[in-house]
Image 1 (cartoon, rainbow, N blue to C red):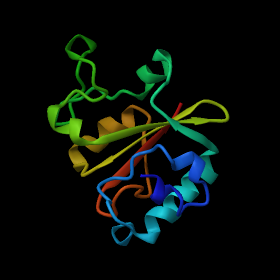
Image 2: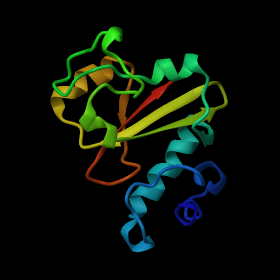
Image 3: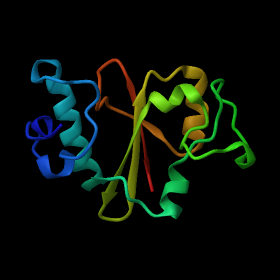
Length: 139
């Protein structure tokens, strides 16, 4: 939603990205805007994209089931996380000066956290909703 992007210091970076289920300005908290600004400044984001090469897309993936158990590549389909419930979680990719940044957010249970971190992700401030955990990975 581009009117949300306009509230940040970097509307060109966030214009085409996902903003959660915020359909009006009164539901978009100032903390979310501040966290987006900090994300851009900290990781030198250039723009949000869906077009990453296969090598980078492969590094973004997390293969696990709903219990946090890693899944072998042979069980992997086309989604970035192998778990039907996780298809609801949103994923974004940003181009940076030196590579890419992978980001997703959701109601992440603690039992999944170890596997997420094992894949190189770390927790960041919320960028969609204050009650959801956001994880990022530098690629």
